[in-house]
Amino acid sequence: FSNTVYSVNENGTATITVSRTGGTDGAIAVNFATIAGGTATADTDYTTQSGVLNFADGQVSQTVTVPITDDATHEPDETVRLQLSNAIGGASLGTRDATLTIVDNDPPPTVAQLSFSSTAYSVNEDRTATILVSRSGDINSTVSVNVATIAGGTAIAGADYTAQSGILTF
Image (tube, rainbow, N blue to C red):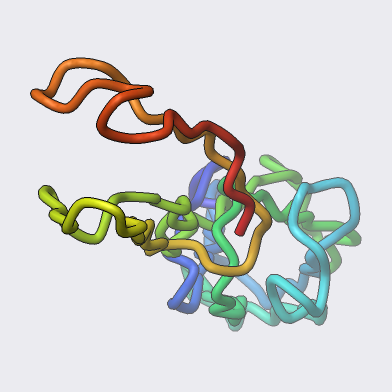
């Protein structure tokens, strides 16, 4: 390999360069493969690649592409192990192993946000006030919030209103 570490965005294709050093006389070949042992899942996060790289007399480098699958899941960056093996034609292997890092491009999930739908409410005496709590962001998970009337306004609990508390679950 020309490097031991490669990097690609999740929505791209990795181009891996294999370089021939120590002379370019004669034709040689080497096997290339993506192998087990990285954190990425073969054929889910990337397309498995393997084959023979044939270097013609005088040829210095070859490239291999590794297609990356662009998913919609926020996840840590993942790695793919790359390996060269079975050099033929009088060649020997230098750097046999390399690592390809797939850099995640998905935003973290949103969190549920709960808020009063208004900053002020009013109600006539001897009536019931309905206070609306709205949910935004993540609407797929179950969330709860403690709610309660609190002192601090001009109305007096027990005289002007009945104190309330509880748990709202969405």
